Image (cartoon, rainbow, N blue to C red; front, side, top):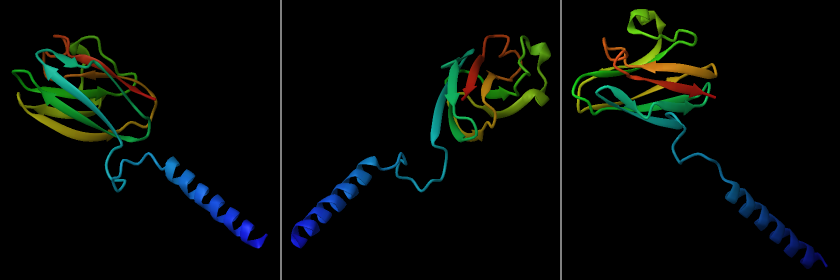
Length: 141
């Protein structure tokens, strides 16, 4: 009977180890450094593709921003409640954070964190670009 209990104990421990291994973690194998969420935006003359992005509140995310247009472009997120309808309403103080102007044919990656859930207006803050149609929405959940 003792040998049967010991064998049963080994089986139970093996099953627990296998189950824990199957659960794993959602870590992608990195050391925990860097953002776990990555989004992409491509600027052309004069729009973003896509025009909407979703990121988690309070967690760092990385934006991979590519300029496929013929002129410089930015990806600027305005503070909550500071949406604009025309460039005449724009002021640099309304910007929560931004990817500064990048040259045509280049790309960059930058990381940011938005603490508050909500919808944030995204614009190209270079003069005439917003009025030409360069805007989108960052949804923070």
